[in-house]
Structure formats: C-alpha cells, structure tokens
Image 1: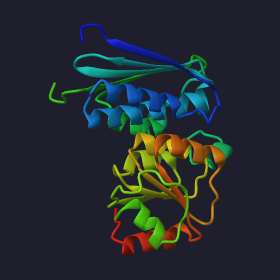
Image 2: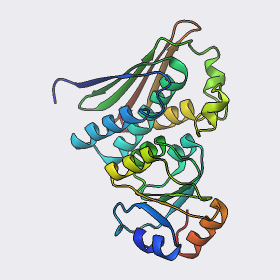
Image 3: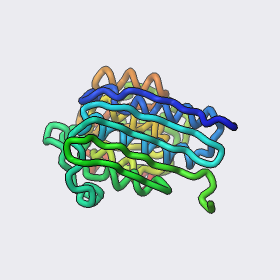
Image 4: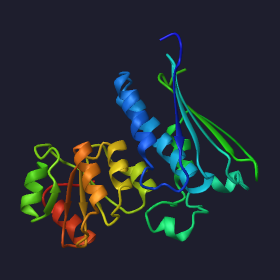
Amino acid sequence: MSEPLVLELQVKPLDFLAAGETATHFKETLKSLGLPPDICRKAAIVVYEAEMNIVIHGGGGVMCLQVEEDKVTIIAKDKGPGIEDLELAMKEGYSSAPDFIRELGFGAGMGLPNIKKNSDELYIDTAPGKGTKLRAVIYLDKRR
Amino acid sequence: MRIKEICEKLGLKVYVEGNGDQEVYQGVAGDLLSFIMRTAPEGAVWVTIQNHVNVAAVAVLKDIPFIILASEREPLQELIENCAKENIALASSNLGAFNLCGKLYELGVKD
C-alpha cells in the first residue's frame, strides 16, 4: 500500500437514526483491508464517538478515514460552535448534551475520553465559534 | 450457552434470531451508549432499555451478537430491521434489567 487509502463521508446534524452509519462503514472498510481486529475495534470506537459529537454538537460535518501502511488516521471536522473549555470536555462525565439526547443514552460525557483511550495520538483544534477539527492516529504497531 | 438456548430458557420474545448457535459467555448491562462502547466485552449479550436504531450500531461496532431489551420494551421497527440486516439477535423480556441479569448469571453468563 504505497498511496494511503482515503475515505470521506458527510455527517448530517441531529440525524440520530443515521448516526453510527459512518462508523459501521469505516469499520467494514478496515476489516476488508485485513487489519487486525483490535485495530478495527479501536478505530470503530474513535469514529463512532467523533461521529456522535458531530451529530449532537457540531451541526454536521465530515469524517475522513486514512489508512497507511503503519497507521490509521481518523479526522472529524465540523463548523459547529467549537469547544469552549477543552480540558473540561476531556473530563470523564462532563457533557454539554441537551436532556432529550441524554434520554436516548447519548451524552454520557465519555465521548472524548473514549477517543483518547483508543487512539495513540490525539489532536484537537477548536475555538468558540470556529468549529472543531479532531485528528486521531492509531498505529498498527504500538511499539513505534 | 447458545443464544437460542438462552432465549428458550428465559422465555424471551424473539424478534431477530441472528446467529442462534453462537455461544455467549459474557454479558454487559447499561443504557449509556458510550459506556457500552467502552466496557462491553466482544461477543457479549447486552441488556438494555434503550430502544432505538443506534443500539444496533453500537452492537455492530462492539461485535455484540445478542441484544435483550428489558422491562417489556417492544423494539422499534427500525431497530428490528437493522439487527436483521447485521445478523444480531434481538429479543425482549418482561423482566426488569436487574432480574434479567440475575437469570443470565444463573445460566453461567457473567461479565
């Protein structure tokens, strides 16, 4: 694999019924490329949580999956309100999701912590009013 | 124990048979989707009262082959359809989650 494989999908805002589709699609792609199951599972969690963030908070956006020989990179971009206090948002249990979303089982305050736990590198570029860009990297060989 | 045996022994109402011959050794209970994303063991049965299509998505992503809705929840049509599409067994029980998990534990399904 010399050229990275790149997949890009649009995520609609507040479309809870479709939510999870991007993650399912990306996971199938990774599986079909023959990547190890633990990598597929980690990537699936990262994509799912990032996708849900775009659906709930980001007002829609784009998810991108990049597969290279040594790593999987997941990029999630939205033009939403941005994250005011990133340190607080990274804290387990903190959520700014509205009640009607929590009743559906979302907004547990575990999205970003789950992403961090399942990725080897995580970069979040955000500012109030400027949207959020998240980039998570999972290395195929963790010893790198 | 096999999925279809669990359905029989607990008198579950089955909506999607899924892979009924698959053995299930572990279980997880919860209604917060990110909590399940974090903690569910692969191949586990998932007991929940969440009843919408995203439950199927979480199951697919976590390789969960069997979902039981507790407390007499009738699954929504979209959830049934998505479980059928993904070959995930879907059943419901009259028991609440607490008692249902107790029964599963008696059958040898643990966390």
